Length: 498
Image 1 (cartoon, rainbow, N blue to C red):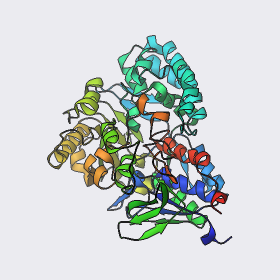
Image 2 (tube, rainbow, N blue to C red):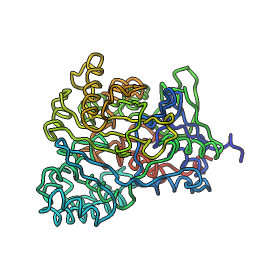
Image 3 (cartoon, rainbow, N blue to C red):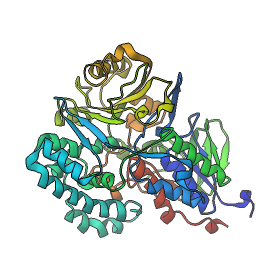
């Protein structure tokens, strides 16, 4: 059969979820076209190139490399032949506001010693927490991460397990049931913030991240996360399929209740047997399906949903190096719960902040000019449902972050800067078409998880499938790649259309 005779699948968006979906569909006999709005692939994993510096725009952490290895295997290739993935030690260095430092890694004895130094009375409780995290991981990730929740019966079957695992509790609540020291509670509960969740409200299923990191480690790629994106694009092209950039989709076309293809913003029409949307979930339903009357994910329902936080990201390069700063640092401000409430509940830009500081040149000197360092500082902030005026507040906020870093881990930072670029929730809304500028789509609270989350098999129109942060299992690189694995179950084989 010629390539043109194969059933055609269109993938909207070239984030990790979209690229993984394209590879899986190509392996199953589809002719695949990936359509990307931006001038380069990656979506949230876009790469900025500024005056000799390279900055990963979003994801920087790889925690379940087998998901990527599986995609390479589907194409008859070895992941390790194309991507140089380096294990991180420590995974993160957590720095509390009083200067206390807590390093995390995958070695059980090292972690016991770290806990003993920080909170000697909590060592036994910490061990019990890790054991509980493993149990939740075995169910939440291994059993359910790639399972479609298309029917209510799918949810009913797992409710007993979820109740047994106390998934009705929040992450912070579950952590607090095992350890008493507040610093340790923070160190064990902040992870949901990296995927758009409030640790005080998201389901404790997300405590599985602690064991997931211990099980597979935390890794970074030489050449940055962008090297993995380029590798995925090469796999797609090696299958004979296409990734088109500067190709914004304006409409998913339909005939009755059946998808027929897409119309680009340029006016070009492209026919397809199926369409997979890796675009923002709310944008997909609110803007790309004008020809149908939605019955489930209506504008009113999407408006009332709870969305993840926004992000402020400052990319900067320095003309000197800071070798004492680790690859991944978590710099915590003076408040924890109060700051999180300002972000998620009050939706105001607080004067204090907590940061994820990324210094990839700690591992890979090639992404900055000789003798220089590349960084990004990421702060969780409210999405655009609040009253923050980023046009006037972005630069003062950036300067406050710069002053804080200069006082703490990056002395004389203001004098050492050579490049600087900011991203705010407005950029997420306008550039990435993310509803409310939310960085991770729907917040992963219990009633917006599994069957309650928008399904991978669209409830609105036949032939439409959803991958990415807004569908099951959720945000984060493992989550969105797993959402593409779900397609193996819900998308018919290419032979169905022949």
